Image (cartoon, rainbow, N blue to C red; front, side, top):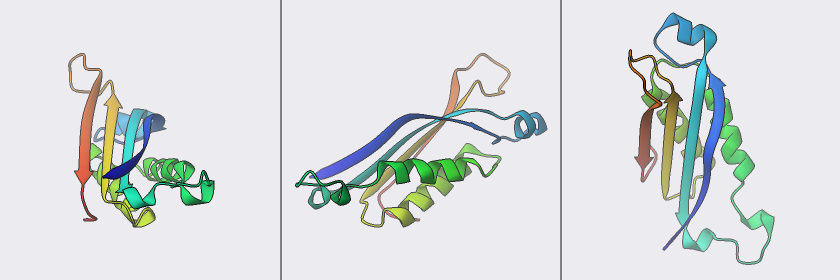
Length: 121
């Protein structure tokens, strides 16, 4: 049995991309994050000190989103690595990053990269 915390639909304005205009003007990115823990980690006493910190989860993502990168894969990997070092008792981490209206020469709502890992890499 496991226990998960999630933040879904986190929106950021960031400057990830290959093209110069993406780096300059930026784009909207949407993140879904999930950190899974062993069931023994679930807070049983209604005590905030026993629970994983949702604000810390957001802060990690926010800090990593500020560092421009060319590839969504690289952004997802950097967020995942930082989450593994922050939540060392996690058993699974999932990072889903969506780049809204990507410049692919066609109408496209989002390009998406999903990175799931069962251990740090």
